[in-house]
Each structure stands twice: as structure tokens, then as C-alpha cells.
Length: 94
Image (cartoon, rainbow, N blue to C red; front, side):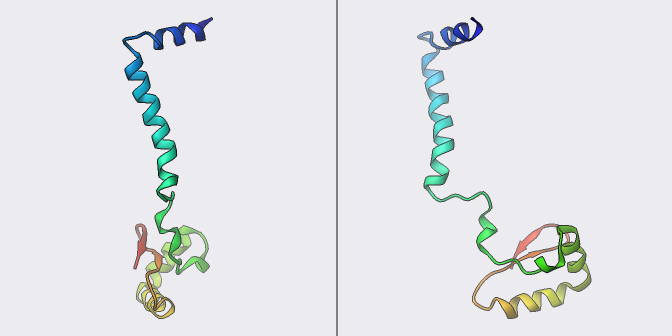
């Protein structure tokens, strides 16, 4: 009974434009991003350098211990393009 009351309240003539706009916005938000190629993580396509260190906390500790060596290793291994590196604060694209 309550569902039919909600449906009747939403489909009154003065509320139809608002309900229609909300439906269009929700459908567009769900359909458009995959169509134009948006990914959940845009950095996922780039290789990650210090994953062998283990967890993100261990990667941060590894960065704190040998940041210059990690950058040198990254520039040596990935001469053709950019690479990801977990720094002391966040993941960085170099």
C-alpha cells in the first residue's frame, strides 16, 4: 500500500518534470562513463615500480629508506614512459 502511495505522489503532473530530470541524470551517470572510456583508476595503465616491497605501508617504508635509488631504478627500467611509485604520502606518477 505504501509503495503505491509513493508512486502516486511522484507521478502527479507538477512533479513529473523533476522526476524525469532525476531519472535522466541517474541513467546518464551510470551509462556515459563506460561509453567514453573512463576507468575507476586512471593510473592503472602505468607500471608500478616498488610492488615487490609488499603492502602499501612497506612500499612507503621502502621509499623512505631509498627514494633516490627507486627513482634511478624507475628511470632505468621504464625508459619508454612513465611509471608509478608509492611515496611517503601518496602514489606518484613519474
